[in-house]
Amino acid sequence: MYSVDGHAKMLADRVRVAAYREALRRTVTPGAVVVDIGTGTGVFAAAACAAGARRVYAIEPDEVIHVARDLAAANGYADRVEFLQAESTRVMLPERADLVVSDLRGVLPPFGQHLVSLVDARARFLAPGGRLIPLRDRLWAAVVSAPDLYRRHTSPWDDEACGLDLGALRRLTTHTWHKARIEPAHLLTEPRCWAELVYATIESPNVRGRAAWTVPRPAVAHGVGVWFDATLADGVGFSGAPGAADLIYGQAFFPWPEPLSLDAGDVVDVAFHATLTGAEYEWRWITSATAGVAPGRVTADLRQSTLAALPLSAAFLHKTAPDHVCTIGEEGELARFVLERMDGTRTQEAIADELVGRFGARFQGRDQARIFVSGVAVRYAR
View (tube, rainbow, N blue to C red):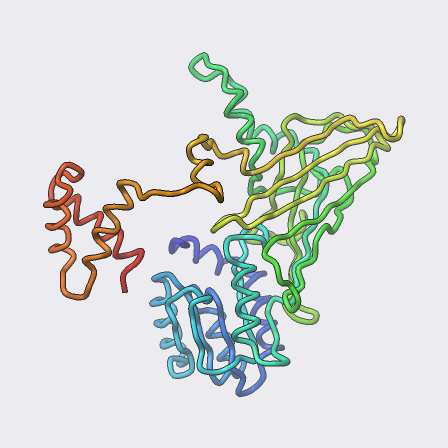
């Protein structure tokens, strides 16, 4: 869920907003039906109306949808936009759309439910011959030599705070990729495209690919920079490459556990795997470096994963195993007790009173119980 400040930053990205508006202007035909997934503040829904759409279905699960309603009304489009507060995968529409527009990416396109939502929308919302915005995203990577960027993420763990060895924490941070502003001067190699997401044909939310480079000069390298270029419509798009106009997305920095000293002619090969696990992606980057002066001699073999950055206990991992037989825990019992009483006859206050009566040792008074009930209601209630 974006904060108000987060939505403001999205709108302040003039390059992104202008590109989407131009793509809508070129793609929307008079009388078209448009679906706007993740409408947020409703700017793209309004732009679709301005381009001639007859009907826009603006889908947004968060409370910001009420701001989008106000925006549509203020611009004279309230009668053409139908707002639906829900996840797009749970929405049923009365008609097929000529166009589906969205921007559900994070720093990189494999993010949250972005790809799942687009595959679902293409199958259930789009009419035969319908269009998608964006059309495609291309993922790029380059080897990065950026000591300052590397230190920004690792130096807190290199110092012996309180006289302690923080090496274990440092290992966690080098199994995490970071949003960054990568400069052209940081690029040790030419960029390589390692994946292309064509939204008209993509089926899986998982993305994988690889890139390889021959190092042009001796240098100390610190990891790999990754970004994407977007094609929104024919001839309309934007680039997240270092040196291009700053975008809200930025770039991603995939650090290595330690800097690598590379010589001219060395070959660096990186395989990327982005696998959706529940609501989040697990990223893996597998790096090999081979010496150019002695072809075939491996100088580095690195295997990193965002899963390794999570301080997970054996008990936690045991719960996620497919063959684990689960029993409900205390928090689950409390949530079930509340949900069973959300039957349309009780107020939240009444449920909180019952909660205190049944689980008095768990709550310090009615106020704490009310907070718990409200949390369950926000997540599950209508």
